[in-house]
Length: 87
Image (cartoon, rainbow, N blue to C red):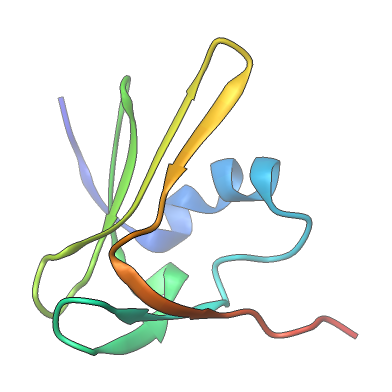
């Protein structure tokens, strides 16, 4: 069963993939153009993977699956992703 969470809930799986803090990265929705932090997106997490949606228009931004020792990442819903360099 899916549970609606905020994007911070996806921080763990994103940390497994990316070597930096992804919840503070900002994305622009390819659907409506809204800009926001990954942590402010709507997350649905279940056995098949994680889906991050735009909180403004509900467009699917990022899909993540981890199976068979591989990560599958679909980011076609994000027009631009801005990652702020940690210092």
